[in-house]
Amino acid sequence: MLRAGVGHSVAPNPKIAAAEATVAALAAAGLSQATGALVFATTAYGAAFTMILRAVAAAAKTSEVAGCSSAGIIAYENEIEKGPALAVMVFGGSDLSAHRFFTPQLRGRGAEVAAEIANAVRPALAASNLLLIFPDSYNANSETLLPALARELPGVAIAGGGASEDGSAGETFQFCGDTVSNNAVSGMLLAGDFDLTISSALACTPIGPPHRVTGVRDNIILTLDERPAYEVFAAAAGPLAKDLRRALAFVFLAVPHDPARADFSRGSYLVRNIIGASEEHGVFAVAHTPKLGDLVAIVLRDAERSRADLKAMLEELQAASSAPPAFGLYFDCVSRGSGLYSLAGHDAAYIRQYLGEFPLAGFFTGFEVGPAGDATAALQYSGVLALVSPKRNG
Image (cartoon, rainbow, N blue to C red; front, side, top):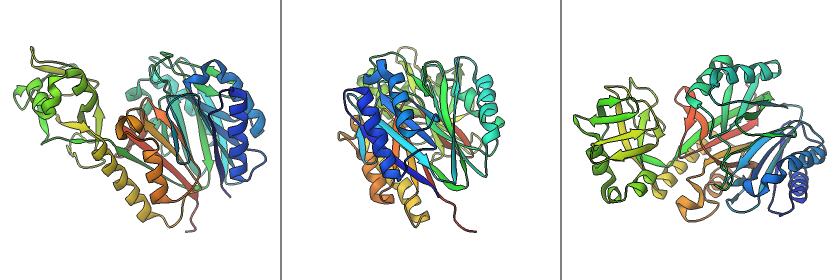
């Protein structure tokens, strides 16, 4: 049997908040003791993260505790993006085991960190596995870490998100046991015999047709379709181009999962930030290294497009399932939430509307880890939903 429950608290006292959230999570799961616990806590508790982890471990009666700092937390239908807030999810039941891990010194060590994570969790792998990872968003090189992790652990599903903060700390924190650190990756392997679905929704959709990269130097795109790249960017951005800083917050570059197919339909591309643009030089720079001849697209982030993509994802999940899952984890980009929709609790409310009531926890991420075609990749401006259900017979 799979058991899970979620509790949250906004109590200013961190010890009280941790105990309150954990007791509520245990009660919701029908457990007196947990197999493992996940903790997501906002930056307002920063000085007391260690105290929080010890309080959660004591209340849940488990040392298998992991999580990270966050700009906001998600618990059932609640999305709390300001002030002190923490969410606790507990696990139990004979069909699920939980194994925490922690790897320090993340910066510049993607392949080495992947090997260390794999060595830590490999002995605990079972018939079904979900590897949850929470890297430091400021020090992770996901384009190295995630492919290396997939090679080390073939067939293991991976999801999670980059630890975040509210801008007041300038660093993020990773939790494991009662260890709190930055420049690290923490996480948990959930292993057992269960069904797993991982899906993602994106807040951005293409504006106009794809464009071919006809001039590029490193991460600077010089020309698209033999036109100055800035000219293409400005035409797509429209009135936003008059305010470059604002344009860069809403207009991005789309890169197909499979360069050979150059597909820009829903769920077929990654979004990467345009990190600078020069009208004078006719170029723009991206957080990606395109190649000559690649097809790319300009995409726009807005609430209507984001809502439509979320609903499409949930409709697919609803059609494929006859009952709510045992529990779910939602990793939502910090650029979504109330800042995008102008109201709190948007995505969590839609998840509940389409899939029913079930234990749901998560946090607002620096980047999201989820499916990109047949691979796992760092996503941006996305919501990644991992659903765990009892194994279906046959």
